Amino acid sequence: MARSILHVDLDAFFVSAEQAREPSLRGKAVIVGGNPDGRGVVATASYEARVFGVRSGMPLRTAKRLAPDATFVRGDFDLYADLSRHFHAILRDYSPLVESGGLDEAYIDVTGCEAIVGTPSEAAASIRRRVRVELDLPVSVGIAATKVVAKVASDRAKPDGVCEVPAGTEAAFLAPLPLRDLPLLGPSMEARLVQLGVTTLGQLAALPAASLEATFGKHGRFAALRAAGIDPSRVAGGPGEAKSMSREGTFASDVSEPAHLLAVLRGFSESVGAQLRRHGRRARTVTVKVRFEDFSTVSRSVTLDSPANSDDALFAAAAALFEAVRARDHRPVRLIGVGASNLVPDAVQLSLDATAARSQDALSEAVDRVRRKYGRKVIQTGRTAFDRVTGGAAWRHERSLGLSSQIEPTAHD
Ligand SMILES: [Mg+2]
Image 1 (cartoon, rainbow, N blue to C red):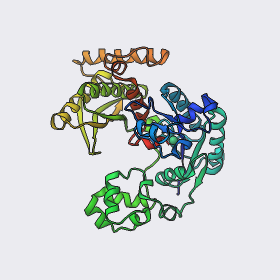
Image 2 (cartoon, rainbow, N blue to C red):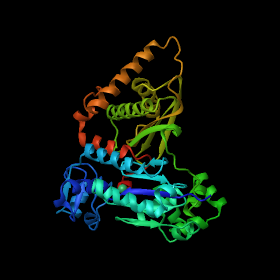
Image 3 (spheres, rainbow, N blue to C red):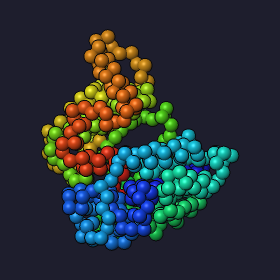
Image 4 (cartoon, rainbow, N blue to C red):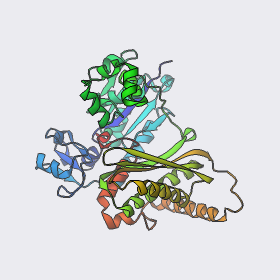
């Protein structure tokens, strides 16, 4: 049976959040990202600023040159996180299958929910109304039978619109669009396809599978299927179904310094640990992902002697994996991430000699309780406090982008 999937994406989220708080910014060129004379990048630009060519991920200095009269805002992660939580809570009223794609976007599978939420387009209209009334934010929705088409459709719907692609018309909808409109098609593959004379998704979809596989491996074949709107991936919703938990972030600018990278790994290990404990899970496998300045990516995994969910155990494994990667490659790092997989229920019997591990668990749980009650900033370990010393702006950006798995800064549009 065809599925009904919505991709719901807040428009220029950080800018819209600032405009909701400060209405005098509405209708103006607004750029969120920090000091325009610093070395950070644009997190989000208002549509009025985009007219001047300003884009997410662009150095702020370039943005300042293109739009000298724009209002530059430093950004407020705590505000964005609160709005994001409320946004996701609204979405969960429409289906149990809600898969977050970051702070400002999610897939919702509303198949079979018609009796409660109406047709998919009625559900989309209702979501848009609630987000507008409760959060004062504009949001766009794509509706389709597959995730990839729903995501492309929400991009086409922006700003503040809806785009529905009826089942059976996916390939025709995608065919005229440029390659860069296809999610997960990396810049290096795009460049090589352009060299081959391929510039639209229709041309990509029409390439013979054998030659794609010869040039790009199996990624090439998947890209061609996705370019035709074919995407078997399901909306992964509900904490009980999670097979892995991860946290990754793209740096505001590439980082080489090991102490800085380890501090970020520490923060991400704590975040993954908190997720595991909240869902009553332990991980047998820990993975570290490192993407270098040229977009080449290395992943390394380790299987733990006993499944873990303490901050210290996860960080110890992640740090060892990271050191192994760095021993072979010292290039500046663009993105870093920590993942936990091979999850088992928390009630796993600890081995008798694991007294030390048990006291680590107790410490992590105590920290979680205090943070839940008083907020994250109350307790920081030595390493997560690092950002206060080395430039909170860069860290802030990492945290904000960190929630969007595998999505480059433009995904915040
Ligand atoms: Mg968005």
